[in-house]
Image (tube, rainbow, N blue to C red; front, top):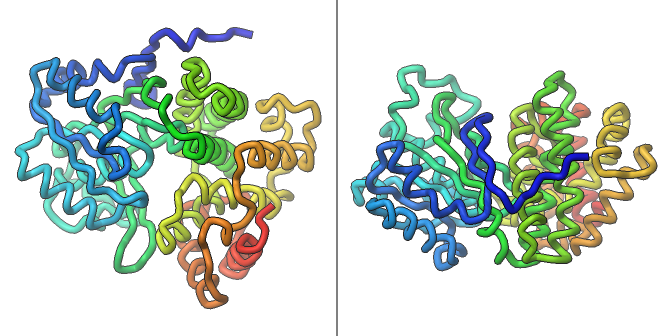
Length: 393
């Protein structure tokens, strides 16, 4: 079997230009220059503002003779207000490009700001479920560059962003079909300092992306291939990086696997995500951690619908046995190794029956529910949430 040297650099061009390699954050300035950016707004979350990779991005811009500033007033679950504030900063600073750097929160906020900079108006005019504004084209949006600093969200190659609607307390997906990152930099070095808990939570997030995307009941061999390759890399790389956090090959395995799993969910996702979106919107829980807690109980719910999918997923994970129970046990063992809590209550989610029904009513309208492997309505989703509050595995 071919084993790539992940200490080296590689360039890929699907679905956008992807620049992989240790130290490639330093190429950000040259990349911006090639796309006509002279004054970039670097968008990240509050917790990342003072981390070395933000200064590294500023240094890369300066080395290319470009200007840059940082906007970091971004919550762990980015809100519509965060996006509006970021747009104000973009305009006040006279910026002409956006660099979204961080985990899912930083990248979603950066994409939202870039979207808003292309058109004056309400952020929700870009709601994924609404009719597309055909008057806008790619040239209407400022150049956007994405740099993941975790190996989980996989958002760096996509145009979509998840933003919390602070009035409805729900997460909504925004996008425009012509709005895509001009390029993404996959630099495993920037993930080395990620704390063990975040390494685990974001790593399981990538695992969920691969599993849910592959289990979507649709024929998409491109996404299926990426989902299985992503599952292989993440399931192998996560134990390695937990044991040796400074290993660049292990970090590289994770960031590439995460990217592949992120591309794969162009096919769709499932109940793990639709429930997690609404739990995160109401309780501000970490998205990857919430996904990790919910994964086993949703696998059990989908068991009958994913029978044909279990063998290829088991093989991707290198398992000797390929039946559902063995696959489920392997997933749960990985969660145990990563110290993932066993219930939503363990991560601070406490609600009554009315709250369960409210969450289920919102989750059923999430796009990810529509692509779940097994059909689910409000009663079924409410039951999954109810049981997850006590024990999800």
